[in-house]
Amino acid sequence: MSVHALICCDGGQERELGTGHIARCLAIAGDLRLRGCDAAFLMKPGAMSRRVQGAGFQVMARGAGISEFESIAGAATELGAAVVLLDNLGRSGAAIGQLRSTGLIVLSIDDPNNPARSDLSINPAFWGCGATVEGFGYTILTGMGGAAASPKPSYPERNLVVASFGGFDPGCFLEMFMEAWSAMEPGCEAVVAAASSHSRIDELESKAAETSNLTLLQDAPLLELLPKAQLAVTNGGTTMLMAASLGAPVLAVSQYDHQRDNALRLASLGGAQYLGGPGQVSAVSMAQAISSLLQDPAKCRHLSRSGRTALPGQGRLATVQSVQLFEHLAWDSDFFGFQVGTLHGGALTPSILRFALAKCKEHNIQCMYFLAHGEDQQTFTLADGNGFRWVDERLTFIRAHGASEAVEDLDLSQIRMATLEDCSILGDTAGEAYEFSRYYFDGNFPRDLCHKFYRDWIQKSVTGGFDDIVFVAEIQGQVVGYISCRRASPNLGQIGLVGISKGNRGMGLGAALLQRALLWFEEQDLPRVEVVTQGRNLPAQQLYRGAGFALERSERWYHKWFHRHPKPEKDQ
Image (cartoon, rainbow, N blue to C red; front, side, top):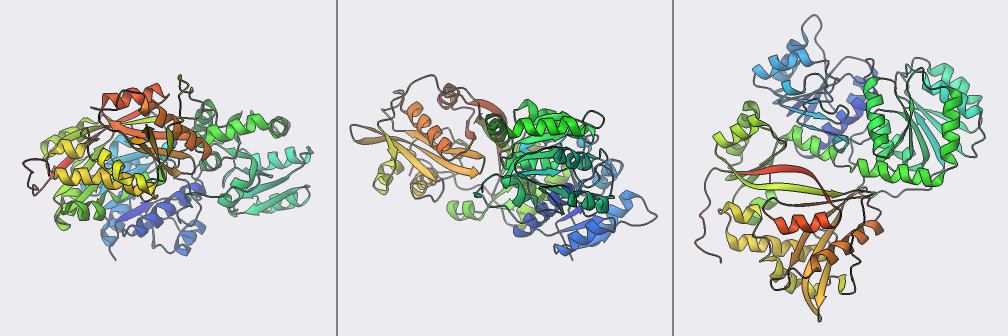
């Protein structure tokens, strides 16, 4: 059997490695399978390995009496895996260099000690360690099954307090919560989520049975419970981030230093209230904090919205794409008439480059896109030395919950939702509005198809084909501009295209359209809004800054051509 990736994770079987690590690895494996890239696991035998097998994935046992490098390399060779994914909180650091020397591509998640050793490293829990990408935006939010969550869930009435403190709970917070709850008269129900592997599970069940309005669930379905949570009391790990992303107000404690750091970070963004760690929290202080929050709806609403803002919900997709690395883009290939691919992950190493070039040869790729993150000199050197051409600077602006409102009181009376009758004029405007884009700047994409690309985008967005809604601006009954919007996740709205017809620019229409889009995002309960523009598009940057957006990140678009498409002599 040949698989794309070998996943190494012993979550739920070692101190500090909770079952959340297994949950996110199952999510990655499940999504890879949907993309046609199979994965297998290398784990210690036990309850977690049986759970992974129950989800339909092959599990190989770690070799006895041999080094970790020999165990991983042997399994990867047997499976024909090109990629090794390490999710063990840095426990496999000593093996990374040896694995890479064999030609394997090594990816790591939450490795605070060795991120620079991996080909790619993703750190949602440890920031400032030199990872390729890091931050709450890369959090993988999932249940144990690995199936993708609905992009637009419905949230029922929040009428529960949900408590979860991981599989090991060395701080004994679970017992502390039950003691706190028994001393309260909260007027609502509590659900305590405990791992079936918990060392004191029998004692906990007995104590729960003696506590009013409290239910203990083993291996509870948190994705079903947290949307019902009036308050979530959690440690600072995966469950805290899952709760915040689902809009549950969070009261956080910490079992370990990295959980403390994460809880404090989320608290600094307004998305959690941090109570303390072992030795700092008592049943009394926990009961007081829970009671105070349950009696303060305004505070809970602020925690809920700020938590959702901090966790836009795109980390799972970005991580799965990074593990997949290369993707043949069927839509782009059909549209432009030649084979197009993209290289994910945001960084180049010699192993990643060899892998990508082999995939391009396999799929007869003529043009490969590559979006480089950060300021990694090795990536730039490899790109420049291997025929990649820098075609664009991609700037992402965000407007988060709590951002200042636009300073102008804009007249939106000439802004309305687009209809099918507007499609013709919208297409005409879009066909001439994006001379700053990478497709035009590249010079190898037929210009008539570049025009058509943006015409199709805006016209199909009117009917929800690309984006979800389009608003238009009118002057004396004539459509002269537009903006398209999409719901990218339950927490994130994205602006797609903004265009003003020539001769009507500089009149404030862009600001009015942007303000109407922000109102729509508010109506859709999307606390975070993103928009992307080009580094060479200074008017767009000025427009977004004026509406309260802030630059979040800058990335470089590269194109690598293999069989140069004939360059058109002039516009068609």
